[in-house]
Image (tube, rainbow, N blue to C red; front, side):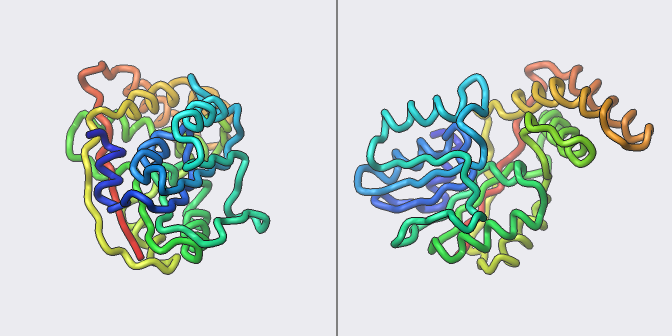
Length: 252
């Protein structure tokens, strides 16, 4: 069982359920959700990015692949902002609203609260997952550093190529959920040893951050610190890299 299937088990999503997934990306969680709800269920997956975003597979290519696999039980909308007045949810609402590994892509804490508050009126249960900044293994430091560098760079020199624009601590996530009107009913931390996110984020930080650091209007001491963190990232070898744990939460 992979991490996404373990998440769905923890959330308690059953066959026949209706699901709104926010920030679906290339559909790692989407495919697991569509498989779980079965032919009698429905998954409406949305993302603010365009169909040409993503590599090596774009979001548009991912949609074509997933729709061919899951047909009428799945809808995927890109270039879609659920905070926009024109966004139209399913008329009967949803059993579950899912935010899986998407919150770090948001601009700030306020945007997270706004999204959580808006889906509060559409779904009966909240299912949330994000990487957990509380390290339990020294090999997770590479993932942590890669995300930290990207987040800081995007404060001073935002890049459309960055996967990490905000980092939310455990306490901030709980606060956002409660501020939006949800009551946390359960939470856990899951390991994700098969995930390649640590490797991908390291590569993305090394690719995008040097140019951002050069362009940013920031104190020289901060630039030197970020460059030293990039040097640290370059030194990691495959056996020294592990993904962060996953914080999983349900709310009503």
